Length: 428
Image (cartoon, rainbow, N blue to C red; front, side, top):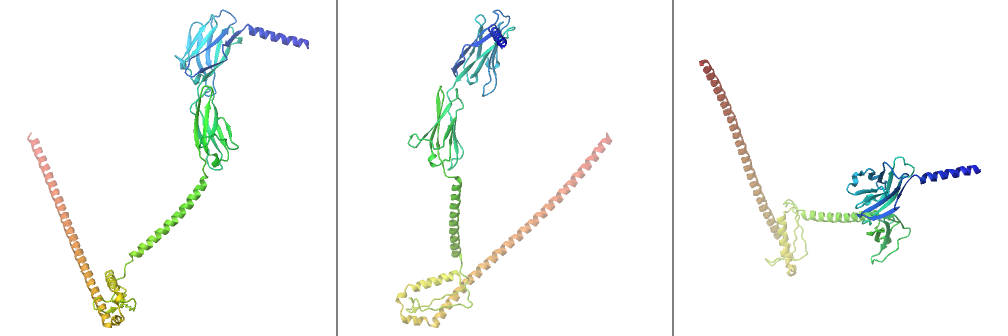
């Protein structure tokens, strides 16, 4: 047992001695914080095993970050005096190395969030590969949070579960988020029961009218802060609103339909025309009431005539005649009623009506004769048009005949010209 302990202690001593005599690399700071847009210088100290070395290569790189997952190369330094700067950092990165002081410095100008990562210094010396050949420092580029974006995830209706989200696109260190709630009078209010808040997400369960309010999200880090606000209005379920709208629409449609039917019925009733006046089998009714006065001969009449088959003009005349007699009905006496029952008077009125009907019927016949005359004139115009159209066709045929004659003359001219040319050729 004692021998095993001795062997273990010797191994540990050998490892410590080898490490103490190997290459040692160490960054001057474990963490460096700088504001975005400023310049920063990182220092790397190295101690080789041998004080004199033919070649020393120092490489500055940036480890892959969580956002992009890409590695960054700032540049390389060679002990014979050459410095290679990465293509993305030309004019932005500077590497200075002092071999006597055994230090190398990396200067970054106007740093951005891209440089906010762990920076590594790696020293390579041929023949000196033992010990610690690299060391890192974390460069934290500080950026105030950008204006956060607040929005509602879900449907803000009664009984639903929704979430209020708050996110800043920029911010280093990573911003923290805090939600607050206010009423109309700008007085802070507590969140409803079962509300949870995590990483800028405010979860609201079984929302109702009481959940409505004014919500503010504060995004902050040690550099600065920003906030966004929104008004949450929880409404009744859209299904209930749709049902109410459908019922209201049906009721309104029924009312409009009833109004249209009534209007159409009245309009149709007004457009009904009286039947034509017919002299065959006239129907006459006599009434003792109401009393009427005959202003022309002093006799009283109580005759009311109702005839079927009259035209509109005749009915108007009867109405005027009835109104004229009715205006003086208060002065009628019983004696005038007896005179009105005289058959000769009734027969005279019937003859007058028949004469008026004959006159109007004669006027209607005259109008029909005029219509026939105009129709005959229209037929004559159509016949003339057909005759002129025929003449136009004849002119077109003549034109075609003359055009054919002209073509024949052209052909004859061409034949004579050919003969003349032939004779000329023979003469030559």
